[in-house]
Image (cartoon, rainbow, N blue to C red; front, side, top):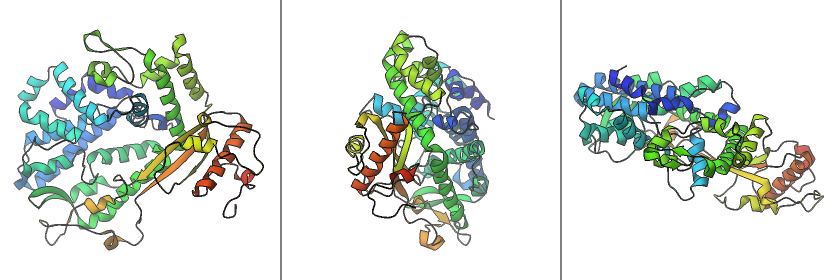
Length: 457
């Protein structure tokens, strides 16, 4: 490992990643998934170096310099510096609720944290001593992390931006590491072979732009990659229990937010929801905030603390079922369910919108409803310099026709068995009214009295 990478790792800003779980609430369901953002970041930095060195060795004419290699490795190493507590729970669940209307993502904080890491640890001179030109290379590194404009390198080196975070088709070393690492810790089979793909990548020019291309015979390997991503989401990342635990942690953080004080620069105090405005404060915000609330004796944290205690006792909100909507109509769903009391044999319970939690899950291949392989360029053995596209029909008739879907999962906050049973009837009646797919619910035999358009088995 390059000595500059070691200097970056040995800073408080990077060491912070040791205390942020890679998979957030998923760890509460899969005990083996105890890995953190720290080791994932090391892996991405390593794989970034592997790929860029392979391209340099295979195509010397690309003029990839040691500066380029070092900058790509730094970007891979630092790409996740901006993650908050419980990783994607923070920017995917907590911030949208705590800071409504704020368009914030962890990549933005990663760029800011990288700047803070360099300046607060006096690494500018160290970077210069290893041959970096700060005026150009700081821009290049930050653009790779944040996915911004590509002004840090000339047009003939635009392919370097496709290594760490590939915005064109999603094939990048970030995914390669977390597929391998997450599958290992979760006990899920990983069918994607990144080592083979590295052997069969090269750079081709298309319309005066250079892009990383894969050998045509690797198209099946790439479909395996996106299939692995989908499997990980279905079986682990979007697990119904892992998700409700994250929802409950989010509720606890919301209730605790205004009482938490995190000291930032110049002694200014920040909350959980505002700490990312000051990198000195944000450096102190990790998964440990969960334990701080859980073990606090402050009376103002009672509500938040009780939610976390319920998680510890496994007194979780009850899963009622899931269904697939036909359209993106998600506003006011809890109210709709609360107004869906069955008319035939109605339960002797009146439920309100606040009794329900509605979680909308998106499943896709990483580019919403698009097939990401449509944006991948390939080369053939006969003419390695020419880039081509390969249609789905050229590969197999067994590949998916649709590349995105939404699931609606509904939970009941009240744990009383009678209320949970009634809530399931409300949920199924709502699915009937909306003409959604037959819901997957537990104890379905109790719900046969409800009118459905086809038979229960």
